[in-house]
Image (cartoon, rainbow, N blue to C red; front, side, top):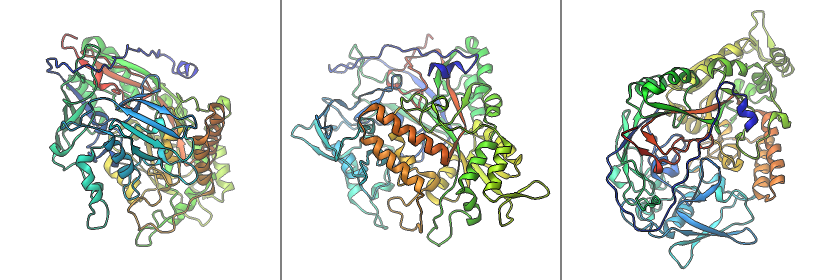
Length: 594
């Protein structure tokens, strides 16, 4: 990690670790509050139901918690709604003890019944499509744990079919209120699906949404803002017995351009910029000159745990009308390993680092976050693709492609190689990457039609209609590789490069899984089963090598996390590990004298 950060040049990376506020069990003591934090997001929320979420950022970073959570500085698992847990000697039984006096935002008790409901009736329900399933599938049979309430309403027992190393990291699932949502799970809509799948959409009356996190949703105006207010029943307290969070109100402005966000931050409208997506590198030098006068500080967290990549649609299935999701001609290109490897060699990622990221970043090669102990570096043997146009053309010719007199690339049947590349509009980094990809691939005779589109439209194409050819997007990361099971396993809910049938979908025909995808499935089962850390590292090293050989995702640049914060905002614990810069939002304060 230290070696990596030294390569960022002029910027000195420093982590300031603030002493964590302790949690005590005495009666909460209210203190006077009148504070507001204004943030920005690029798009509207797609759902208010955490089980159905497939995007980041989302409202659930404010509104829900799970049994456990990951510390944003250390990466360690720490208690959340559960105050403790006990693991049996054979590692197949885990008993969680909930905190005393937990309540929902409507004042109702939060008990073991809610834990059992969340896991047994929602997460493990085959008729409910939730990405929370995949990290909890265990063994070759992909079985779920069994979960039951013990005699005490604070005790919940999970019984695993076999030892499962990532289990505790998978228990950060947002816990849902059984007294509000159970009826929607048991009731069916006109198509025979649980009504839960359409419950708590963005048109829901907000008073009906019951939460357990530090904030609840007060109002939502589409294309304008979401406003959150303190949850009066949130469980955390500080060392003096004051109930958390400290900040009364959070205004989440919908600002669909990072350039507009910059203008708003410089004018003082926004309190923070870069909390959910790192501050753009070209903004650093501009804002650095304004720190003192603007009364803000640029915090630098280190290398990002997220990944940014380009991917092709490898899906060879057909829709309900018998039409292929991808043009069969283009599908043959995309499903050629040599084609994907040629693309990787043709992308000048160092130019991306120098020009788009202003030197604040390094070329990315692994599907595992750099902070993870399982990360395999190029120095340790990970395969990489250096910029080499001759090698790219050699690979293309070996796969049957050819060039015409104008230097355009043709396939073996004489079809011109041309495809559409998508990304989410408003994300200027990705838009700039897309422009360069178009230029780079033009040098090997490929015509790229680059088209930024609304994020909601892009998500729909990736997860629902599947009518896309190539895209640039990113995924959040972390220290545990198995938490990416929803992306990497073939049946995962976010297996976007070859998305199979999801719960409730019966219209997909002739879906195929490649041998190398099945091998990734096997490695994920093996890695989760293995309890010896050194052996786990070897398994995930094999996974990383396989991904780099097959290239379902072509990784681009690992950026540095940077966030601009008003000096009056205090208590932040910032690093590059979590996907959200305000991971300890409940401890953040507003000092009007700052």
